[in-house]
Image 1 (cartoon, rainbow, N blue to C red):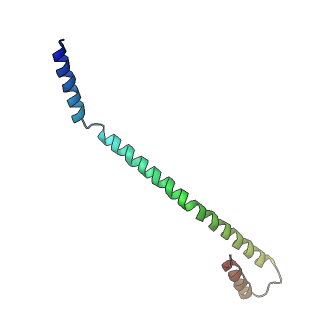
Image 2: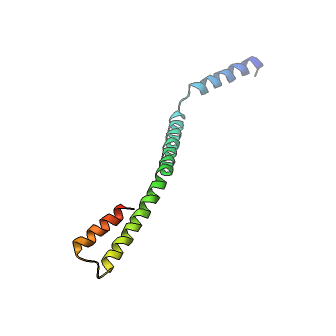
Image 3: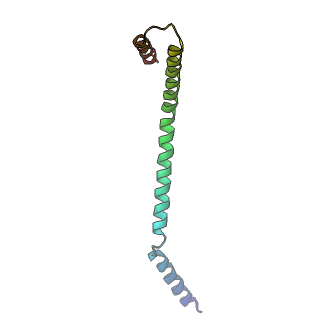
Length: 91
């Protein structure tokens, strides 16, 4: 094959490659999936400290409730509830 024919063939092959869009959908899905994964990681990083604080507060309030109901001399039901509400609200 002559040098001129080789250039024409290479140019035609390259032009066909530029017009071919068969892999474009795959690239779009990869980019979209990576973006969704990145957003998920960012949301997790933003929410994590608040979840930890909330779980510590819930644990402390459950300890207060457990102590209030296990104490036999704590007063009436309504008095115990009011005491627990006040102590949990202070957390």
